[in-house]
Length: 127
Image (tube, rainbow, N blue to C red):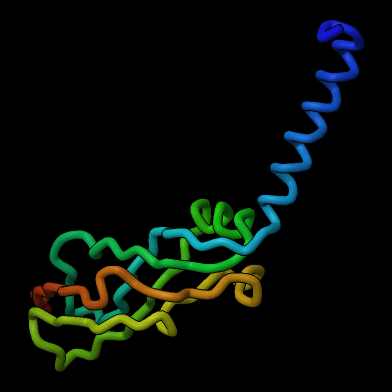
């Protein structure tokens, strides 16, 4: 009795699992994604070390959050020449730039850490 119509039962199970994946990908959810910090500064400044790692808690469809792992959002800040050699930048969710195709579908809720420390050196040039 259990083995009767085994192919039909297996097909029904596969269809149910596929439907579950499709529906769960469309449901709103939250998740963390990496954010690239890109400081923009004059040619006389050099960033010491790598830009710090920042993570953002984002809300949106699961499929869109997965896409953000492939094309991470960015925080771009302009640093003027009068800034000190060590600068602490306060970050807020509004600083995060999402890819244009996802800007209306995904919201940034929180950033970790909320501030990053950047260290600069002055580049010496010969004339």
